[in-house]
Amino acid sequence: MINKPDMSLLQKELPDIQIVEEIDSGAFKVVYKALIKGRQEALKLVQIPVDPNDEGIKEENQKRIFREIAILGKCESPYIVKLGSIRPKELSVDGQDYVVYSEELVEGESLRQLLKSGYKPTFNELRNMANVFLSVVKELASRKVIHRDIKPDNIIRTDTKDRPFVLLDFGIAFQIGGSNLTRDTHHVPGTLYYIAPEMLDTGFRQSLDYRADLYTVGLTLYEYASGVNPYAKRDEAQFSTLYRIKTQNPEPLLNLCPDLPVEFCILVDNLMKKLPALRPANIDMLIKKLEGIR
Image (cartoon, rainbow, N blue to C red; front, side, top):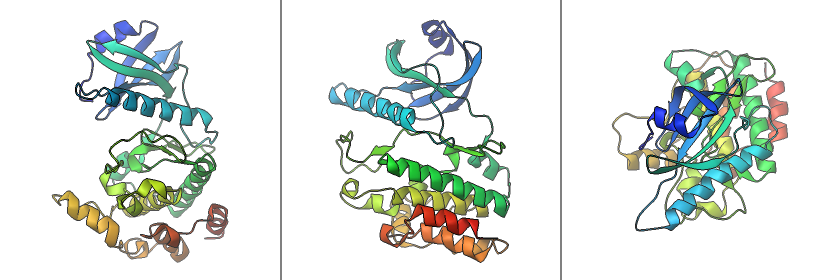
């Protein structure tokens, strides 16, 4: 976080919460493990960026934070992180404004941590993961929500049978038909290597749908299976990366993982098609097809 508060000052503002330790941090967000009424939860502190020359920036960012929380409150899938006991509220620490709230503390390792360790998932785990996140995309689509940031960093593997994977971080989720919170229409939200190709089109918000999430599910499966993100190239100019995302097809997954079933590799490759219209879009059919792959 750019303006991370001193933990002792933050603790004074939250006397009923015991902050244990910091567990994650981003540009405008920090996450702590905290004890709330004797229960461990993830305490999230989100900085509200401001611009002295533009009063509307603060309101825009406040609305984005509360939209994320509202979306989480509506979701019922066990594979989506749940809100915790602390409802969102604004607070100021040392002159900086934040929104604080809590989510459940999901125990486990992120797929990013597993990838860094050199972990190699089995086909059964990959198929299970595909089923999980196809069902997640189906629920989000039914609520006209696009996550837009499905990636290994935002997925926790829990090692529990009934809830093996959990999706986190709805910070840039998009509500179809909702009010546009981004005044800069040229800004493309998301993480560079995980941006769906159609999000690079002019006016992409007008036609964006759940197939963008199907793309990132496919890309995440591809990377988790092979250990390779096809668009991550060290020291490459951002323009060149974006051009490859838009135009260059990844190497077929089967070439990198010849031990996986051919049908599964083809399914993953198809989810990563450049044009949304070429991706398989019937999620129920995809799940049924997965069940038949051995």
